[in-house]
Length: 396
Ligand SMILES: *Cc1c(COP(=O)(O)O)cnc(C)c1O
Image (cartoon, rainbow, N blue to C red; front, side, top):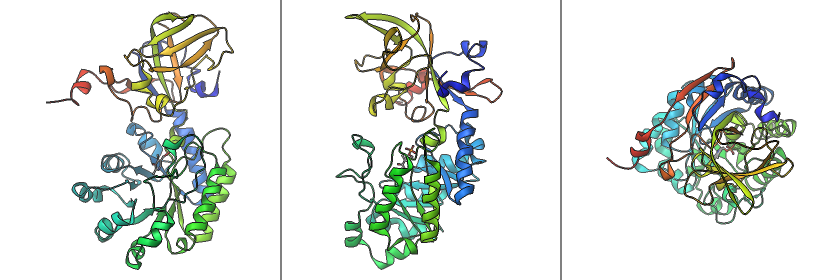
């Protein structure tokens, strides 16, 4: 069995899993804890602080578990900041938003400890108010160092990016008063990358902003570090974190989302029908890529599937598709050891991240219920959804 599904070994033949109504997400508490322990040991080796980027994973029933290992939460705006403050109150709350709103900023100050601005204009507009209330103030820089190819949608250093202040703009707009207000520098440029990409980025940061860093209290290196993936070079990351800490005498922060909950969840689905088109067999599932695994289409990628290959290496081939009207609602083409049957349960892996917090009800599709797979092998329903969740977003 693929290591992604290791956490299911002891429960896969039990009655508990067979009784689950599909589609549903199952969050694997043990895997989540293992990830958090990897991150926690990096914190103790390097003195860095690691925050959960909630946009990737915000199933707050697990925040007590995560808060035992991590330093707090990172938010993309008001609601995530509030969630972090409410559900992980013992941790720090950091927020970055491309542009803050006048009518929300006051409330945001109730929740956030660190506020990171995306432009010098926003720093000038909101900085002193935040400072007066004792907040730590940061500015996001853009080191203009692209380390990923073919994924422009996930590359904050792509040409025309709105994210972060380039050195060019910094030199035009920064004033001594504003610089004086800054406590830290933030950059976020990676996506699912290894520490070689951070090394290249840190070099660019040092070249472009090396003169600023010694006067900062902290540096936040964002997310996109694939730290809990098997082939990740943790030793090199730790070297880089220690280098930055000692070179500029700063507190280093990381705010991974994906790495916290990597491979810590599954999407369980059943086959509703099997159709055929020009010799290709297509299984229609009760889960939808478009609604329940949006990154499959947006990224795009083919998610891991238990007991199946995502190529032609096994004898029985099927396309797995969703029940919606979207022609492209296809999760992927897979091959199996035996024929599939209507009613069979299939299990997608790595489904804790960018799913439960990103799904939608397109086509009136129900949202999948969410279960906890406890360390003792039990399934506990955390929340469920119905017609009201669909209708309530649409009118009075
Ligand atoms: C998306 C994002 C993260 C988390 O990214 P992952 O790829 O999930 O690790 C962290 N910080 C910022 C500013 C982000 O936009």
